[in-house]
Length: 101
Image 1 (cartoon, one colour):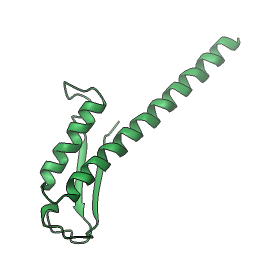
Image 2 (spheres, one colour):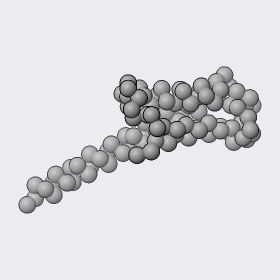
Image 3 (cartoon, helix red, strand yellow):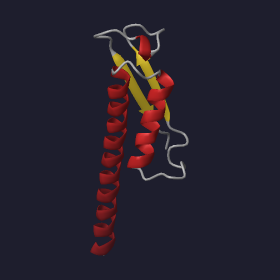
Image 4 (cartoon, helix red, strand yellow):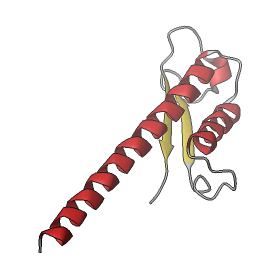
């Protein structure tokens, strides 16, 4: 009687930890993309590629199945019509990553 309850709690705990881990990986990938965008030497497409590469390595996704639907958005919030290579000092740059489940 108590075994199913304990197993249910253990599986729930395991899944919660996996969700927290995936959230941290996404945050780190976005941070790495923002770091690369802040150099002013990479285009929006190059920043997207850096974030996807980070996700592939962090998730051990050599085939690309887990990151196939990942979308990365790179935006210069101060001048939304510009590429991040044209960003000036103190421009706000936002990198957003989404993976549908």
